[in-house]
Image (cartoon, rainbow, N blue to C red; front, side, top):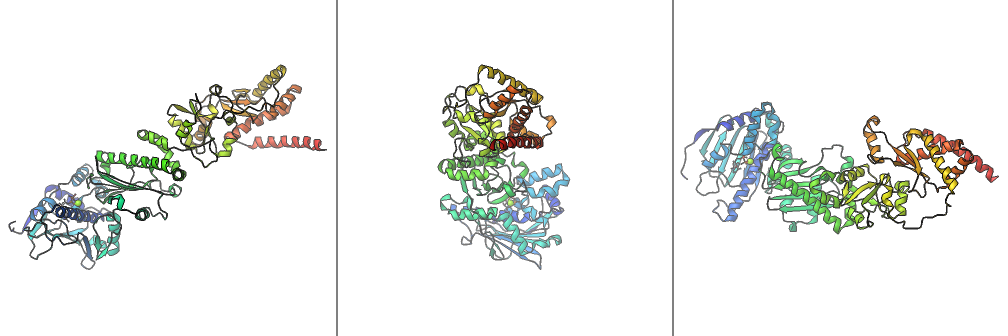
Length: 635
Ligand code: ADP
Ligand code: MG
């Protein structure tokens, strides 16, 4: 290339505009200037490596591919030097003197729409090289192209409107050095601690070594870009701990490299322990998004749906523009495709664990199941989601054992159209639920739900395959008639005589009178074995537990009145005795007390008794009477 004259050039109009904004901005995250320069250096190194591998003739081939950063706190300068591809005279003009990049353009567009917003939006855009003028009063570039005959060039600007280019009079090696003369208000950056922090924060995973005053700063490699086969488990663990500050190793590592149709690498982790517990800040989740090893956004919340927010890690793509703004990410088709793919990957991985290592999957479920369940709205992935759900059930040996919906369905009885579930605080509580007695008698499996969220899940899902979810307290008893009892019911109790049947009906009427509007009906129960009574919803619009949840969140007035039926177990000893008392004296106060007690006990079992005082007083009174009888009997 021919020699050239030193001369001044004007920046293009849009560059001037951009520079003007940057120079006069009071933007607080000015430190991103270094991220931009390092990413340019890294690009330049990538390019020269490409030329070398391609076999092109490259100047100073022996130079090691690295980035060196130095500073002088007396002169208030910082230099960023790379051994990359370098620039010649014309390249400096076209690359640095004009805005060709969409990021800067987009930035200006947004600015023209909202002038005041400059300070807030600079950091979100990769405004590239020019961001250096947020901290520099003067910048000098010295560059030597990888092409043999290209003279070394010198470039200088104060960022105000023009720049100078001249040929360098001293010989330099291939690459680019950027010398920053700091503005008076930016002297703080000529500081080792400060620079070290900035590099670690934004550029830790640049694949070329970055030296600060001769000391290597980026010690952790961008592991996600390495081939899986070359990575040891310890390296994954170390990276995970570095990323999350967790002290334990991860439960699972999900490392994916996808080349087509869109290129991306993802290195994701499932922590052993849920972060939920101490996650005061509900915003503290998301994956780190990189574009070609440069951090674009920390904790991006759109790469994974919220129900997978327990996943930690990074996603890096070649196919996204480095200058992409966070605002436009969500509208970016490539980004959306990456996000979908990452989500499917996580779910597929979980399916694999569930299949190959059920024990590990239970461990996962115990920690993260609570959040995971919230995925019932992810219709696109509902197939996988449903397969991944776990429950405890009446078929389990203990509270810890888990089953999938497929497990349930594989055991489902012939002609069974519903998947039954019961909600309770724990296994013992549900076992004692009178509504379960008929299911036990008929050997019908019931899902045990311990978390109020579970009921939201099953009521939102409505069905699994062809089976509707049905709460045991709103099941239609007729639908159970077709199932035989698995064991003979103990019929030690004699059937009532015709006469007594009539008295029993009158007793039920009496009980209805006592309870008044509180119940819609008092009737004989077909479902009870061991309990004297239970409450049944008259309609199944709102299940008992759902009502309880709604009651906690809304004012009681806004809930429709509950219609309940009190069911009475005719064969229960208490009821038989009550019948005898009733026959002797239909107005006996004991009948009144017992009826109230049965009703309130049923409410109490459901967790729907608002005020226990009356119940306890009545119970004490009845115990006092019982003790009197008992005392006399002993004597
Ligand atoms: P971008 O990096 O998005 O292209 P920049 O404003 O950061 O935008 O840089 C503009 C251009 O200047 C780059 O595309 C590159 O061609 C050139 N450039 C910047 N820094 C260097 C460097 N250190 N070595 C070689 N070329 C560089
Ligand atoms: Mg750049």
